[in-house]
Image (cartoon, rainbow, N blue to C red; front, side, top):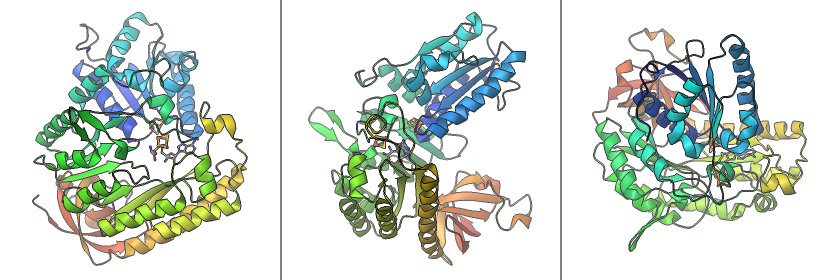
Length: 473
Ligand code: SAH
Ligand code: SF4
Ligand code: F3S
């Protein structure tokens, strides 16, 4: 592993910008920690920086467009500051490789599985001013084992200071599901589960640094499988293992793939282990069986709803979240109605709705025509969100008058109610174990601690309330 800058490179400033999912945010945190260890200083703007790194996402075209537009801006900056080094890391780096390197503004292209090399790449670019690329060739054939990445992950996973008291911990890399629309298996590579003892050591260390909540990450986290000798570990085993770590109070995990396999065991862990939060992110993607088949999702809408029913029977009060794609190739109005009907039955806490975006190289893009017009996609998107908003509103209003425990994240981004209470008690935001967002006024020193909040007002996605007291846990 690279461990230090030559004299003279020290104090070089890096600005890192991040797009994409929690996996990417975690990678950004690892890269940041490794650069800091090597002597770089972080900067929160492009102006004062020697290096700009962009961690990118390829999941939809729009995500890539945002990066290209930022690159246009950086090209302009480089006209007057030709020594500025620009590096692209993440999923776009893996998907586009040399095509990105050819961009005038780009000096470094580094795939998500190569991030342990980032300090070396940056140092070399500063010294030699030449372009460099490192991505995985034939990623689906490449070995899923990546000891450098495994070491990098263990060494540089630190308590995320942006959300005090919380950390994300990857338990799996990659994905083998090949949903027909999805780029992830091609940019993140084959599925691999991390060794339980590595996960455990890491979480113990994080707990020692004051972390109270860990969120375990995997693209299909319920497919976690690790065999050591006679013993085969599944996600329920990992949940039990993490539950035993002193100092960790809340454990969340995302994202689950809808399947019966291990589902009962995971739900039992949720029901019986007090630290496992009653929150399940279980994307359905569509309510139409015809579309689900075309998406290569391995369940029917009926089977999906049965899974939700089992979850609610086993873990009363479990909060659920879903993802949907509208305007998938050949989605008719009837197919869309089936999705609306599923959302009404599912009664999610919240759901994320995306307009289908063809991704080059996926089976969907090769075989299916993107034939739902943009305005229809947009209309369906808005309509589905409106259906969900009504449900979220009904569910959140049940909290009125109740007192909830939240883990306080910090200052609330938007000024909501009671902004007049002054600088000593700004508006704070926290989340409940079931992932409901709560906004209330209180001292900023509560960030990273548990607090009790009495709910006095609700909206579809947010609960508002008054601080009752800090919980000493
Ligand atoms: N592994 C997770 C999430 C993957 S990406 C899972 O399986 O649920 C997050 C979400 O982006 C997906 O759930 C899906 O709803 C959406 N998505 C993925 N590819 C997409 C595409 N090509 N167009 C539109 N939405 C997409
Ligand atoms: Fe993509 Fe499907 Fe894998 Fe999720 S499960 S990352 S949607 S291929
Ligand atoms: Fe995540 Fe986007 Fe990559 S969703 S895995 S950053 S393509």
